[in-house]
Length: 306
Image (cartoon, rainbow, N blue to C red; front, top):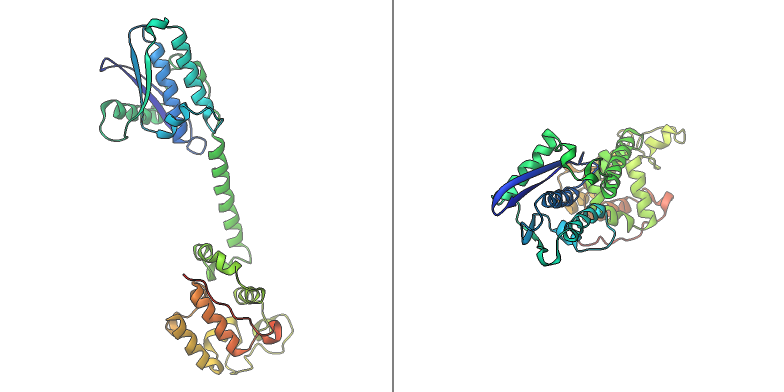
């Protein structure tokens, strides 16, 4: 991120300064705008005392302007403190009768205003060409500015979320992401959290395949065969129970109509994609009575409005 300031005196360009703050993972645009004010105040201090009667700092960031009049300790406010200190130094060195009037005004960015466009160009040059020579910069900018706390926290949080997501995806539990994508789960989080205990347990059974269907019971040595005891056509997996078992063909047709889906599009992921379909799934399972021995009768659940 780069920052700059250009000095115009009586409408004529005089000087410029630029400063490279560092990476966007350590600083914000707000920090850059505040640094621009510091550079501008330093340029002002190089003019002969009494050669101007008014000063206007043109800034295209309203947060930086508000911070100049805010005395609360906020993130990055140490830069504004340096700006105000430079202004006070200039005023103290100027005779009372000749002290200028100082304005800080907002200008719209990228509106082809000569001074503002010039400053934007210099800020880009600060990134590619680096800062102005150190002897031209204010003492405060002779060293690297401290990193912005808010940006560091945001960057760390994003890195942590990415790491945890990758770890979860690679783990043995990552298959839940293939059934309920993260963007779907974030939308339906409140719906899942509002489910009665029995129904939320049932959803977990279906997603993990750790349930009382014969395919899983056979795998853990609790059933002599993985075959479906209702239709005797294939292993009783979750998909078989929900979509393929001929013993539940009528209930399965009702489920497809309730979800407005063809049989080819019926998957556990599509059934868990909206509150209406989740309610239809519970109605299907309730009609089969397949999990009554484990969970007892399933309670009624009215889906919230979508």
